[in-house]
Image (cartoon, rainbow, N blue to C red; front, side, top):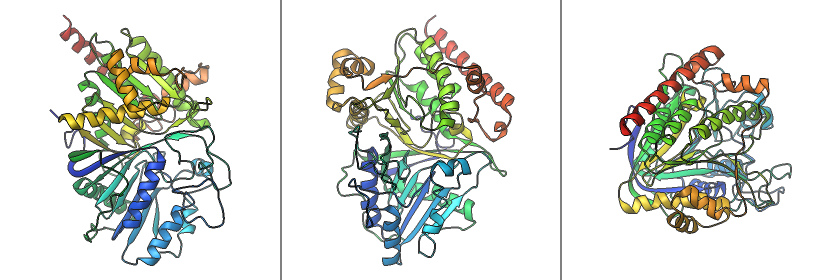
Length: 492
């Protein structure tokens, strides 16, 4: 039975002739550039952030002529191909966040003024919420979806080198190593994402867009081999309740369904981990004698002071809860570092359950991604042996690249030592996957964690801390009790 149920755990499912996983932004930017160059009718981008100065294939040097800057690429395409409709729909970020990005994307409006590129800032969300979807569409024939924005501090290669001048920013500074993952799909799955993007454009601008006229061609990047052929792709969303529209919490429901379905391994990569609901669902599985192992990869310390104060404190509470529930020693939480011990920012949002389910999107494992912000993700569930081997290889490659080993090495260690956690123990000789230690809590930190400051569950509790805490505790208790009931039923 599939976990992807339209109207419950996903919006819809659609067929893709091809699907591929893009590990780290070097792969995403290179594929995106080739796809945009091949576009015949339309380029449509949804983003949390966007900076037209972003270099798509940097060489380590910044000069007066950088033809790989995404803004220049788009302006040139629009000028030379009048039949090509280029639209960017980016969240109109709050001023404190904009300031951290040198007031981009707000400045991008001036960048694209008097060009054929249509650039719109989207604030059609409740106060305090954000548009967090990251989707790039080419001709409705090809789509990218995942955790990556096109911004100046995102490029990195899977090597995550200590020093890499290709991680160059406009003022010549080098940004920190960063890990991202995107998924690329074509055919009906791309068209479905086009429907989602056009509906958001309508809500933001009032303009109704038609699907682009089919002009043929194949924008799939020539250098990217598909990892899957003829696969059904699920699209799941989060949308806040606002202006008469009900909340859409497909991703939250899907998280709980996937955790309940897992048999052997739950692998999670995420920037944030603060949701009591997901924590209790995982705790219930860890309490089962024959439940799955759980491996979480995140960042040791959030890069912004606000997220460090809010998300890191709440995550510490969640980690203590899972450690307490881990009576059979199946839980591990890691933060990756470079060979020189520099923190790698984990910005990816993906999950792999056994060798059957893989999901890549924009949603964090926090409260707001379940009901307050807008989110979008793709998922596949595979039963055929070849497809299941593809999912396993994808996960093994992800784990291995953090430790500087191949996915094949991870697969061999899993077979030899009896599981993913044991394989990491055996291969992690240089300690490049370091154990995440919860931060020490001051009274202020305890208050922030208890009331989930900065992390609303939905629009109704965005400014009502007591209601948020009461609701989260009530729902977490219900999940914990359900887990205990299942445990008693399975172990009389």
